[in-house]
Picture 1 (cartoon, protein in one colour):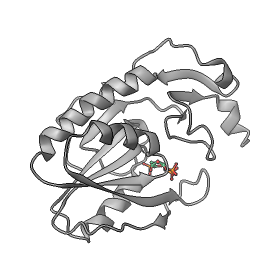
Picture 2: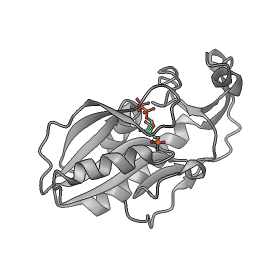
Picture 3: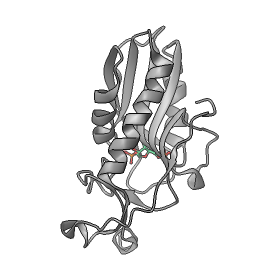
Length: 201
Ligand code: PRP
C-alpha cells in the first residue's frame, strides 16, 4: 500500500484491430496479448526482487484476477502458497462501496509476507476494505499488485505497490475483467462500446 517507486507502463496506443468475433461489443484494443505478456514478465521480476528469501502467501481476489494471476505466478520464481478471497461489489454497477465476501481465506497468514493481487484498482473501495481485514490476521507485511490502475476514478486514498498498466477512465473488459460477468475470456484488454453498458444490456 506504500507509494510505488516502480514505473508502470502507460497503456500504449496499440492500433491493434479488434478480432472480428468481438467487434460487435469492443470498441478498441487497449492492451494487446503481447503487451500483457511482456509487462507481466517484468512485473514478476520487480516482485521477485522484493520477496526473495521468504515464503510468500499470494492472495488473489476473485473473480477478475483469473488470467492475470495465472500468468503472473508462473513467472514468479519464489516459494509461495496460493489462496483466494471472493470479494464482489454489492450488486451490479453499484457505487455504494458495500462488499460481499463470497469466499474467505483458508491459509494462516500470521507472520507471513503477503502479496495481494487484484485485476484493477479503480475507486479503491475494494482494496481499502480488504487490506484492513487482512491486517487483523497479523501478516508480517502486505504488498499489493494490480494489473490495471485507473487513477482518475479513485475515491479512497490508496495506491498499489506494483502496477502493470496505468489506464485512462475507459470501461475496460477482457483478460479476466467483466461487464455483467461477460467478456472475461477476451485474451486482451479492450474498451467496451458505451452503448452496451449505457443500455444496461
Ligand atoms: C472489480 C475488480 C476489483 C474491484 C476494483 O471487482 O475485480 O476487485 O472491482 O474496483 P474498486 O477499486 O472500485 O473497488 P468486482 O466487484 O467487479 O468483482 P469481480 O472481480 O468478480 O469482477
